[in-house]
Length: 174
Picture (cartoon, rainbow, N blue to C red):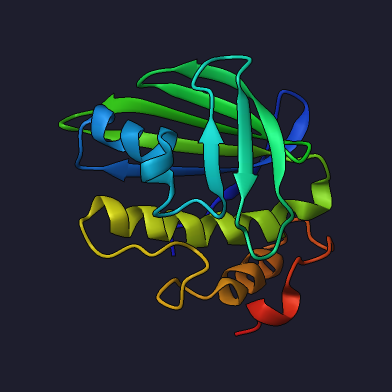
């Protein structure tokens, strides 16, 4: 299990993930910053104005209402950050040998959402891994996605802050 870590980011609670890929930065950038790529792994359908200050919209997540945020940073092919329901999502790519390293940081509005969000991102990143490997990635809400609950239980057992409500909890049960 490739787990996220609980950190402090600019004085706020956050969960961070780092993944290495044997693909060039530009290929991974397309998967993490373009609506067509995001469709394979991100929990919502995304439409965006690809520029700092642009609007980003989220829809079609079975556990969350549609919402909008602001693009905080958009520097192809290395940095993409945006707001989402009070949280911030930061995606950073860096060349690493012949491939690249992706760092995803979810800056949290509430500390007690850490385990819940980390479990969700774990499932999402598993789908991104499949997509980048050329395997069928149908998204984190698909029947072929890894179950969410084992990740959540592992994060709670490891002491990551928890206790926040779980949207669609009955659908997440393993």
